Length: 68
Image 1 (tube, rainbow, N blue to C red):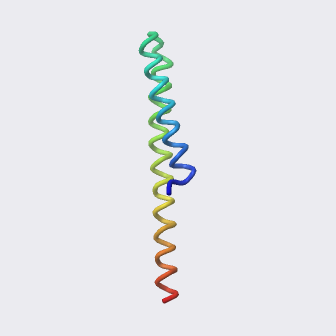
Image 2: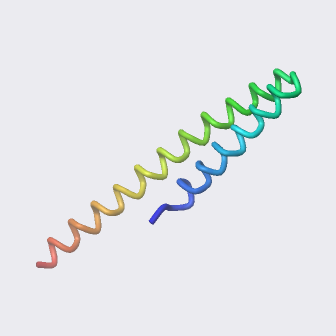
Image 3: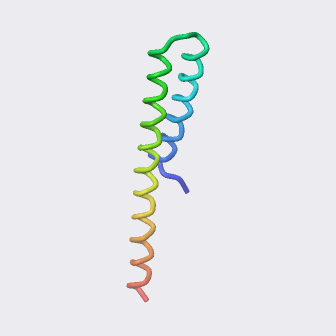
């Protein structure tokens, strides 16, 4: 199940893509650039969230093995 960082990252990516599209359609280059930056930040945040989740899952597996 995705964690908060993963979900927030995905939302930032979508928001960034929308800004890029609107910026390109209206000729607003700064808005398009802002959207690209936001999308990239979303990818990073999602990656951090995925890493956190995987570390947590690994710790849980190790804990279960130690109990055995």
